[in-house]
Structure formats: C-alpha cells, structure tokens
Image: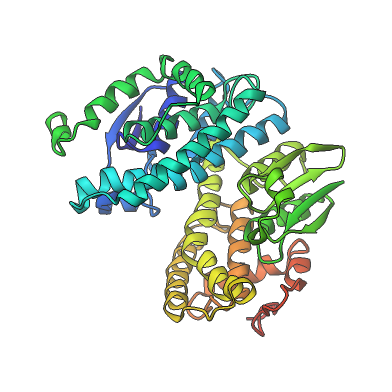
Length: 224
Length: 224
C-alpha cells in the first residue's frame, strides 16, 4: 500500500490525490506539516516538501515531487490517462501544470497560505492586509486567463480533461478555501470549477477541507 | 526548423540546449532578454520566461516550460534517452531535475543572476555582498549533497547519465560563470563536472559569453 505524506491545505498533494482518485489507486494519507521540518521527513525528502509517497514494499525509495509522482502513476496505471494525446498536446498539458504549480502558486496560493494559515498556526501573527489584497488581485487576472483558455477549449489544456485541470482545481480549491477567490464575472471558470468539484475524485477532498478549514488549530489532533 | 528563445545565462535554456545537442536536434537560438518583457514575447509565453521553442511549420503553437520541452523531445526523439529506466528510476530522475530547477536555482543561481547580472545590466546597482555570501554558502551545501549522491551512484540519478545530470550541470555552469562555486573539497562533484564539461554537447555553451558580464578565469578549463 502507498502512503502519501501531505497536509490538507497542500495544493501539490491535492493534485496528486485527485490523480490517484481518478485512476483508482488506493493510498493511506499520512499527515505531515512541512513547516515543522521533522528530521525523519527531511531524511526522506531533503527538499522538505509535501507530497512524498512511500510504498511499504520498498520503504527505502520515497517518491518525491508532485510532478514526478504524477508522471509515475501516468506511466504505470493505464486507467484515466491525464497526460494524453499527441506529444504536442502533452507539452501543452505539462506547460499548464507548471503554470498552476509555479505562477498561480507563487502569486496566489503561497501568499494566502502564508497569511491565513502559517501566520495563524505557526507564527501567531496577524495577516498582512496588503499582501492579501495583492493575492486576491492576482487571482482576478489568473481567473481571466482561465476564462480565456476555456473560451477556446472545453478543458484547461484541450478537448479532454487532463492533469492541467487537476493542477488548476487543486490550486484554486486551496485559494478558495482561504477566501482568496471572488467568483464574480468569471462565469466560464466558475462553471468549469463546479464541474470539477462534483467529480467523485474531488468530493472527499472537499469534505476533508471542511474539517481542516476549522479555525481550531488543534482540531486535527483528535483523529491522529 | 526549431527556434529557441534564450539568453546565454538562462540555466533552463541551457538544460534544454544540452538535451537537444545530446539528441542531435538542430535549432536556431534566438536571443531574448526576458527582463525587457517584450510584448511579442509575452504574447507567446504569458509566464514571460525563457526557454520558449517555436517550429516554423506551426508558428501558432509555441512550446513553453523547460521540463515540458524536455519531455517532448524525450518522447519524440529516441536517440540518447535521458529519462530512462523503470518508472521508479524515471521518478528519481524527475525528482532531481526539479531539485536543481527549483531548490538549486532559488538558493544559488537566481540570487547570483540578480546580484551579478541583473543589477549590472538592468538596475545599474552594486551587488549586495551579503546576498552573494549567502548564495555561495548555499552552493557549498548543495555541492555536499551532490557529493553524497555521487558516493552512491555513478551519475546524479543512477547508473547512467540522465536529464538530472544535464539540469545539474546547467545550473552549476551558470553559478560557476558568475563566480559562485568554490570547488575546494568537492572532489566527487568536480570530477563529474569536468566530465560533463568535456561532452560535445557542453563545449559550445561554455564558449558563449553574456555581454558586460564576464566569467571567471577558470570557467572553461577542463583541469580545475
């Protein structure tokens, strides 16, 4: 059985979990808070980031980096191909996965996590209103870009659902949870996102998010 | 014919160029200075980053993101496979490519480019000595990690050369160009890097120069 080290608001873990669910791959989620920089976790992954996956039959070989993990399951599990089509189609899917994993994350998800999660849970500081405003402003232009993509295509990267949709939905869902998304005047993206939310792969994550959304920092300790 | 938008000190373009040379894929390099944020370039790539590749037979479909580009040529050109082996081996290669593209870049290459290139060419400011010291200190621990990898493996990600070696050499060569690498007490990594430098794919890149910013005296030498 696979174990997946993650925390509920990790967008990269969420992308992997969506892929695993679409492909019907079972796993045990293991709670990891990368900001604690646990020695055992750093030994597994010197980059100190979630997600990490470990299989109990090969404990010494952790799988690290959300894109490397996604490519692995895409290669080994035929069901629900998510990096699909011609080589050029696949390049476009990967470009957009990187777009959401780096640009969207850097501009929106990362500052929201910093201001609304880390400052509350770890640093015990108040959020910086200016940075929150900036992230929410950035979210508007990112959603404009997604609207533009969806004007030309049925899904984010082309005519079929792909890893780009999972990557986008993963980032957006965290930003949305943290109150960073204003859905006004983004009908295209909203319709697409509602579709993503209603997928069986997404519903358990949304439910879990509600738990984790809890403002009580110790809430999770109850079900350790 | 492919056109590759790049500038001489772009580590991501360099990774792609090493791969193309190893695979024997011809291309025209096109000089692009992403810091100028040219409208035509932003129209091609909204992320505003090099490398971008365009084929003259399909001008409307630029290929964007260095990893997506590498995966494309890995899929379409059989010669010199660089993401090779079992699915687990390939995951380890991709993990290390991401390691160099993000961790090494963030800690070392990016601050060196900022302090020693951008400040000189664009901002006309003096470099921040503290930041340079930090980047050079980070380089020591990154080289320790590479030493550790090469204690256990012949190449960075396993028993054969892979995209991880190209990604590592691309980042290190830019850091070295900018005087950020101290080769003392890193014999393992030095031996590996001299091997990389002497490859026919690497030599033309070493001969290139960035305007205004010169490399240190031993940059091209094969006997460090």
